[in-house]
Image 1 (tube, rainbow, N blue to C red):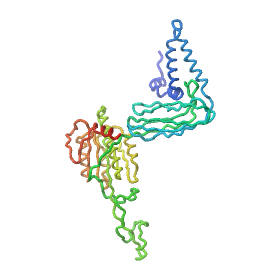
Image 2: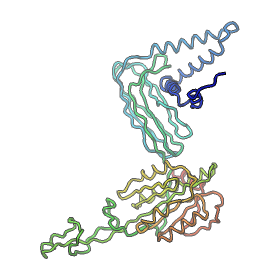
Image 3: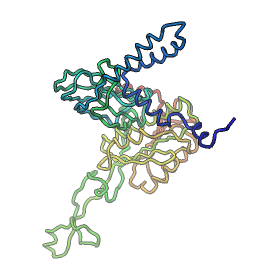
Image 4: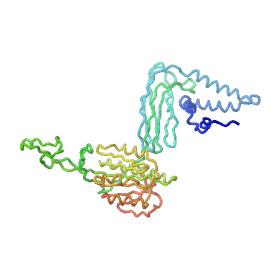
Length: 424
C-alpha cells in the first residue's frame, strides 16, 4: 500500500474547520437557508438514506417532493438588487446578566416586495451570548415602507464576544432560501464586563495624598486651586502664572504661587492566580472577585476618586480612571478580558506601585486566597507607606487562617451573588 506523502499527512492532520470548503458550507447553512429550509434539507438527507432500495419502499416519492421544493426555492429566489437600508447599531459594551434591547429600522424601496429576512450571519455560543430572535421575517407589498426591528441581546458570561454581521435578504415565495444581502450591519466585538453591585466605601479610606503637578496630570482640580501669594520669578516658571499687576508695580517679574494639590487616589489590585486546572468553585470565586473589583471601582468613580486598577496575571494589566484620566468603561473593559493565571499570586504588583506610592493613599486588594506569598505582598505594600485593605473572596477555608480585622475581611462568592441579584 502506498503511503501518503508529506502533503497528504499535513492534510490529514488539519482540523476540518480550517478548510475553506467547510467555511463555505457553514456560511451557506447559516446565511442562505431559513429555519424551514434547513428542516427541508435535513429531511431530504434522511429520505435519501431511506430511499436507496427503491424496490422495498417508495420513499423516493417523498424525496422527489423535498428535492423539488429546494429546486423551486433556488429558481424563485429574487435575483434583482432591491434597495434596502438597515439603521441599527450593535452594542460594543455590556454587563453579564443584564439584557440589552437593540432597536432599529429597515427601509425598503421598489422593487422590493414579498418577504425580507433580517438575520445574524453567524452561530453564537449560547453558553456565553444569547440573541433573540436570531432572525425574523418582514412582509412588504412593493411600496416604499419601513419596519421596526428589535433584538434582545443577553450576555450570559463575561468575556470578549463577536456579534454580527446582521443582514437583510429577500426570500423566495416558499420561505426556504434567502438571496444576496441587500443591507448589512458589520460585525462588532462586544466586551461583556462583570456584574456590578452597590459597594459601600469605608469611612476614612479617602486615599488623599500629595500629588505635585496634579493639574497637568488631570483635567480637574482635586481639593482647590487657590492663590496663596506671589513670589519673584524663578527659572522654569510658566508665563501663564505671571502676576502682571505686581510685575507692573515692582518692575520685576512676579509669579503667582498656588496651594499644593491633593488627589484622592486609590489603587485596586485584583488577584488572578488560580491553580491549574481550576475547578467550578475556583472559577466562581474568580468571577466573584472580578465583580468585587468592578463594584469598588464604580463606587470610587462616583465619589470622584482617581482609580488605578492593577490586575496581576501573566502580564500586569493597568488602567486609570477618574478626573480626566479615563472612564469607568475602560476599567470594565480590562476586567472583561482577564483570565485566570497560574503565575505566582500578585507577582509584580508591589514593584509597579512602589515608584508612585507617594501619590497612592490607599490600596484595595481583592484576593482569591490568603497564603504566605499574598501576606508578604500585603506587608510590603504597608511598608511602602500606603493604607492597605484586603478582601478575600473565598467560600472555604484559606491556606493561612484568616482573622478578620480593620484591614482584612472575607467576602464569600455566595454573598457576592446575592448582592448582584439584589442590584438587578
